[in-house]
Length: 319
Image (cartoon, rainbow, N blue to C red; front, side):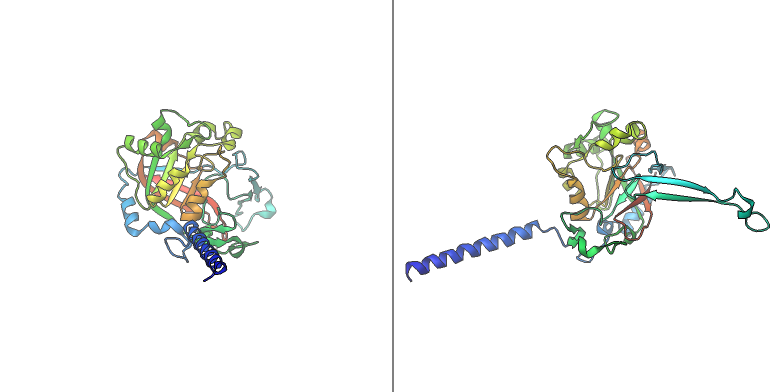
């Protein structure tokens, strides 16, 4: 074998190693298919088994119900350019509109706006990494002008499971966390220890109390929507390891905003896109924190808008 053959073989060998390395790296970066299977469309709701529902029912000792949702109203702040409008139509003001010999009258309402406002559920078709969404599905394959063909909110069932409130504001000894405060794993573990050495378990819905709604909602709307405290990406990975079903907070986007490193909503990508974990935004937590109600049966229903990537949610806690 002459020198030219040696150079050729060495070049081929190096190219082969480079190609194998690139393939291995690509596989390491590949976050799909989901642990729940390539055809899965409900993500971490798979963690809510019948046994989990039964566990939640056993947490009801007092029969006390907490309403965890905001009231839909045009005055409420929303992440721009989202909006909400409401108009009441009085159908009973003219005798000509009364029905029947008993003069039945009624009212009707017309609404317009975005589903990504107020108390809401971010479903699996809401957040992506470039063109890919949950389970590696390309946007061009799942989206139509009439809505999402899959990864949509109408595909998920109501949820009844164990809920855990993590009172970070209380742990820090403040009524509200600072703007864009990043909640660390140490914060979470410290708060859980303070709350009685609580554990986070598979299928749980974890909700953070930051004090944001009670401090700024309808009081300082500009501040409310311009920033917010929330968990770090490392905290998101901690929650992923616990196999939670959903993560919520008493603010408009759950995660800290804005981030100083230039990233945009990395928590959404880690939880929703890569792991099928839902985000619950604008959850009202003030009374739970006040009563030190850290563990409860959590109930979530929502507006089943066909093809939607996010939707209005109805959240309740029962003790």
